[in-house]
Image (tube, rainbow, N blue to C red):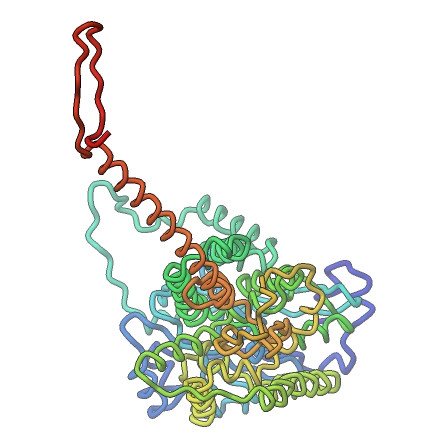
Length: 540
């Protein structure tokens, strides 16, 4: 490993050589395709292999990875965001990243005489993955070395895998006139040289850039969604003046956040990201590391920008998949008649600081041990409910379900009282430069409508909005413009209707008078001398 970093030519990396005996193992890494029956039974054992085959759907493949030594191929990235950021599979020009929901821990190797590996992982590739199990592939290992507070050097190592020919059955299609009869024609030296050149060029592209290239569509979808949300905030008055349109837009956006951003793209931010970022700032920060997951990086960039405009609410109220799950579940609970619990404001004030205490405890633990803090951060049910789709050990699932159940009677229960990520975002959110939420002087005195209907009780009895707790759902702005719910707007509507009624009455009277004037009885007389005709009403 030290020799590999010497080849980078970076003197700082050479100066930070790994200490220890030159004969000590840095990492001893193995990989195999266990969806091949003979290999799967050998490494997993008959029972585990039968379990795997019942799980695999037609066309799905499974990869077995094991390692030992001072360097872990798993790392800790999958604990934070569900992604194994030290290894990836590469076949031709495509790459496959391992995620937590694909992973199963194994205790040992069934094959006789195999080493006692401390780390063994079984990864089931998702359906639809572009991977040909009959062709060669490689497992790429990423190793980094910090050379300064804001700089790292990366090196990669490839573990090539060629499926054994004795386990493959090849069937050649009948040649046609348009095809070359010589099967060796497709393996000409020129084509081999071109393939080697392409592979060399691909190896020169940084890993994070290749990841972004492979997820261009996802990046475009998320960017469009963030631009749409920005438009919603900038033109919030035009939206909230139309209650039905506002409700439809908000519900649709929450469904998108939960289904696509959460369950499909697994782009759920976590307090662990905050702890990791803070730890990197004081140790070995490097942008490349944080750009390994494009969607998470874009989300954090948008959160940082939105904190200056709207505080934490832009994320917590619109872009948090678990927050969306809570709110949609609460909407469903209200529709079927589940009675809601109104938390007295005095008690609410004593409960919401809990999440700040949780965050400070996690932050303090992370200063001593980031790994311990990552485990303690499981107080967030995000990983269970969003990233792993509730496919996890029963105690994690029970905890997540309990929080969702509490949210059925107290809307956004977790957001209000326990979420350490919300607390972490609320602290810098105090620096926001604008106050976009409009209020009347009557708000809070005497009217309490907005405070009673706020989904997270962020509006105090005096009518003021607590920016630390506000999730920018814009419900209070919908009430602000509602002329059948807001007392101020009701009075304005009643005055307007009164004037309209008075104007209509006056117009009707004028019209009636105009109609009655020509119908009065008249008499006409003519003067024979002058030829003039005189018309007078009767009686004159």
